[in-house]
Image (cartoon, rainbow, N blue to C red; front, side, top):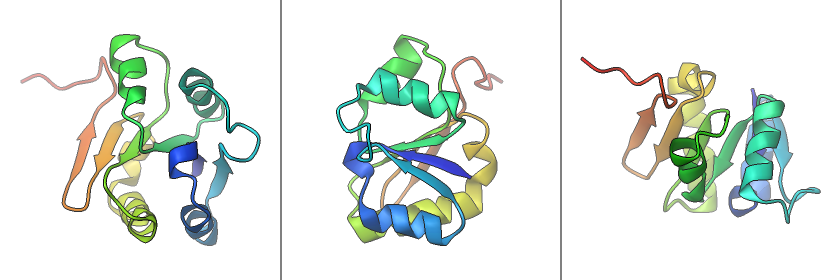
Amino acid sequence: MKFLLDVCAASRTLQQALVDHGHDVLSARDGHGHASDEVLLALAHGEDRVLVTEDKDFGELVFLRRLPHPCIVRLVGLGVAEQAEALLDLIKRHGDALGAGAIIVVTATRVRIRPPPGREHHP
């Protein structure tokens, strides 16, 4: 799977954990450190990469401005080691959602998965 780590979530620990598990990882710190959220979102979308961030501003770009996007994983309140463990567990348990453009929020106690805008299920 391909990932783009936003600057706020681009620890070497997280990057190395993903690489060690066979994933293709691009870090915003490596050449895109000053890129806007819009540029990072477009880069991730264009390269079909899951965008990993701690930043909630990507939600505005997706839900209010309706910009094209890949899957976005927001890690909330997790330490560096916890981020790696949580993301690897998410890949194992919910890999299908990662490929479907879902918006995912991961905390220490919860994973919330929202389908992409326009694909919500309404009973």
